Amino acid sequence: PVKHAGDLGNLNFNDQGTATFSFVVGDISVSADRPDGIIGRAVIVHMDTDDTKTDPTGNAGGRVACGIIK
Image (cartoon, rainbow, N blue to C red; front, top):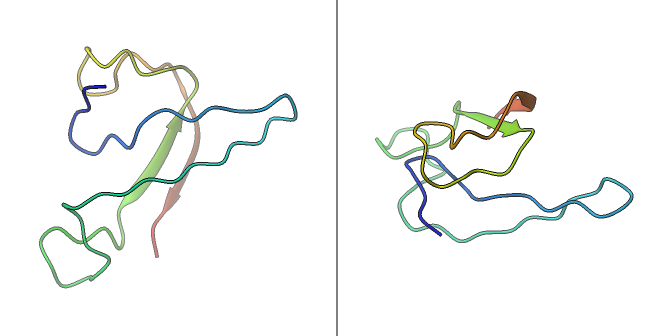
Protein backbone atom coordinates (compact mmCIF):
# COMPACT_ATOMS: atom_id res chain seq x y z
CA PRO A 1 0.00 0.00 0.00
CA VAL A 2 1.01 3.59 -0.61
CA LYS A 3 1.95 5.52 2.54
CA HIS A 4 2.44 9.20 3.20
CA ALA A 5 5.24 10.64 5.36
CA GLY A 6 4.92 9.44 8.94
CA ASP A 7 2.37 6.73 8.14
CA LEU A 8 3.25 3.42 9.77
CA GLY A 9 0.33 1.42 8.36
CA ASN A 10 -2.99 0.14 9.66
CA LEU A 11 -3.55 -1.81 12.89
CA ASN A 12 -5.74 -4.91 12.92
CA PHE A 13 -7.48 -5.80 16.19
CA ASN A 14 -8.71 -9.20 17.37
CA ASP A 15 -12.12 -9.87 18.96
CA GLN A 16 -10.74 -8.91 22.39
CA GLY A 17 -9.62 -5.50 21.11
CA THR A 18 -5.89 -6.30 21.13
CA ALA A 19 -3.58 -5.35 18.28
CA THR A 20 -0.04 -6.51 17.65
CA PHE A 21 2.00 -4.48 15.21
CA SER A 22 5.58 -4.65 14.01
CA PHE A 23 7.35 -2.89 11.17
CA VAL A 24 10.78 -2.22 9.72
CA VAL A 25 11.71 1.22 8.47
CA GLY A 26 14.98 2.54 7.12
CA ASP A 27 14.47 6.28 7.14
CA ILE A 28 14.15 7.10 10.86
CA SER A 29 16.53 7.02 13.81
CA VAL A 30 16.12 6.60 17.57
CA SER A 31 18.97 9.05 18.08
CA ALA A 32 17.72 12.37 19.46
CA ASP A 33 20.47 14.41 17.79
CA ARG A 34 19.80 13.37 14.19
CA PRO A 35 17.43 15.20 11.81
CA ASP A 36 15.54 11.95 11.17
CA GLY A 37 15.26 11.19 14.91
CA ILE A 38 11.90 10.16 16.34
CA ILE A 39 12.59 10.83 20.04
CA GLY A 40 10.08 13.43 21.25
CA ARG A 41 7.76 12.85 18.28
CA ALA A 42 4.09 11.95 18.57
CA VAL A 43 2.31 8.71 17.72
CA ILE A 44 -1.40 9.01 16.88
CA VAL A 45 -3.88 6.17 16.36
CA HIS A 46 -7.00 6.99 14.32
CA MET A 47 -10.37 5.23 14.52
CA ASP A 48 -10.70 4.04 10.91
CA THR A 49 -8.57 2.48 8.18
CA ASP A 50 -6.32 4.81 6.17
CA ASP A 51 -7.63 5.04 2.59
CA THR A 52 -4.02 5.58 1.31
CA LYS A 53 -5.28 8.45 -0.88
CA THR A 54 -6.29 11.41 1.28
CA ASP A 55 -3.49 13.51 2.81
CA PRO A 56 -2.46 13.94 5.51
CA THR A 57 -4.59 11.55 7.60
CA GLY A 58 -5.90 9.18 4.95
CA ASN A 59 -9.50 9.97 5.93
CA ALA A 60 -8.90 7.70 8.93
CA GLY A 61 -11.45 9.24 11.30
CA GLY A 62 -11.03 10.68 14.76
CA ARG A 63 -8.04 10.21 17.02
CA VAL A 64 -8.48 7.47 19.63
CA ALA A 65 -4.99 7.31 21.18
CA CYS A 66 -1.75 9.24 21.18
CA GLY A 67 1.63 9.24 22.85
CA ILE A 68 5.13 10.69 22.77
CA ILE A 69 8.17 8.57 21.87
CA LYS A 70 10.73 8.77 24.70
